[in-house]
Image 1 (cartoon, helix red, strand yellow):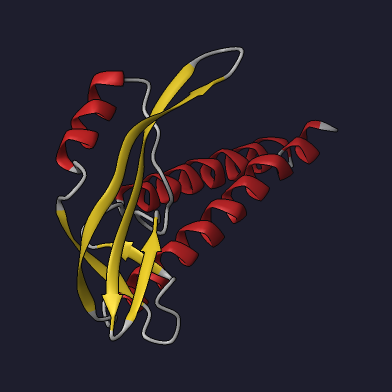
Image 2: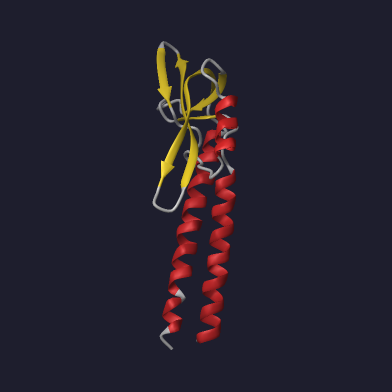
Length: 148
């Protein structure tokens, strides 16, 4: 009978996933009303992260844009942050898309221009978080159904 308490774990994971997906969706909805500025890439490189188990690669990016007389520099790509991949070739393709000097479109918060993201970046992670949350919830519900 103690196994029914084990069902709390997937239910907790599903709650975390739902909250995270909701936060990303809210930010995306909010971003749709932000103004767009043209910026310029000032740094672009592959970022490597090594752990004892594997190595992943992501796009380390910095760009600048102007809001009125204020110059803003940021590295924020999307609300989800930098997405890492196990493929060095995929990370290098991303770097080639964002070479230094490349023009980019930046969505920024009028009240806090440092809160900004590249237009059209990200979004896929929120979907995967939602799917993981649904699967965790289904697993927890199945455990409860089976052992209660």
